[in-house]
Length: 190
Image (cartoon, rainbow, N blue to C red):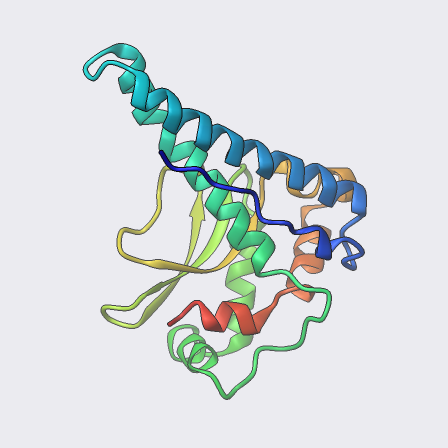
């Protein structure tokens, strides 16, 4: 049986633009996904294959698992010591190649995050042809690009910003963009 342990993201406490209250609530939500992944794996092993319970556990697992992993990627691409994306790495070159400039990429990423609705904004990298895509994902388990690797992940479910920003999603996006750990995002290309 698989058994996942939540990653300790408490070193992010004190992150500029994100209150500790918001972060602690968000960490608790993430820990709930980890708990549910473990519980669903345990229940799936006990459920009779072909039963409605087994089918529902198998269908629901993607939601819980992706909720866990996307939060790990999200928190993992935040840092208290943010610095601009270096021009030395492959990522900046690919961003400029794909979007024309870093500014055009950022404008598109921000605009995607500002769309109405709940979900995620993900900068995906498709290694097969080297393309980058800014993608809106409504639900954890729907809309992901098959074979593409998430590089930069921004949570735009209300729980990620409402305590601090209310309906001011643009303010949250500004804070997020100022807290990106570009070294980590660049590392994810490998």
